[in-house]
Figure 1: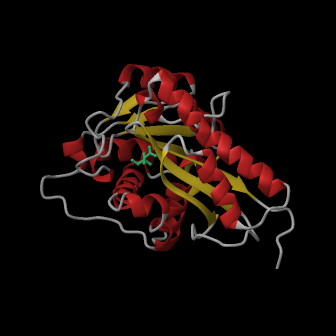
Figure 2: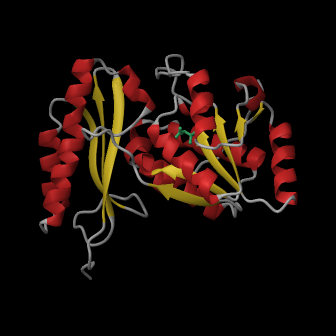
Length: 283
Ligand code: PAF
């Protein structure tokens, strides 16, 4: 497995692969890899001829009061997992290599980035879109795999790729859960045993929402109220029912929607969602 530290080295390798007729699959990550990342890495290494992950804790997507310094860094375990899932190369730039001291270019994606996490963390999607653009410029991937736990992030990147005519196809991948329902996240490492137990009310509430939707409930307000009730042991940031393409809140469920939530459990911010696609959308 190759490890590259600069965009120039990364790009040279990618271009050599493309010249040899190989497709490149890419999984951008901030490290602290778990089974959710492993599912993306396996998809990239199975579906593409060569596969690359990036490991870079991106300062541009953290506000000054957030957990940039505490964000888990588990380099040795990450390498071992990447190797086991068949990854061919890791791009792991340094922060100073990514962002010069007078760095001043950012990518802003309107619309889809504005609600949900974009409303609570106004700096976040600008940092994500900027770093993903830079990573795509270094790796030049044919396919990039993004997990649907961060459904809004996936929508933001899809919109960016479409609007800026980028040549990478975004492949959304299913959210992965622990056996007891907790959505996999690098931030789960922060939870104490008591907090982890409390956090289970998040997925439980979403499963209850799914059951209500499957039973025919179509009023978003009713769904949101039930989820809010179920999540009361947490400090709720938002509970929303949004159109799966535009990420805009809906009042009545007629087409594919995400029921999306964010909450703090102790000091740990967790997000989760379910995707619901009604069988025959009402007109
Ligand atoms: O989802 C993540 O881990 C990050 O937001 C990403 C896409 C790697 C950009 O830093």
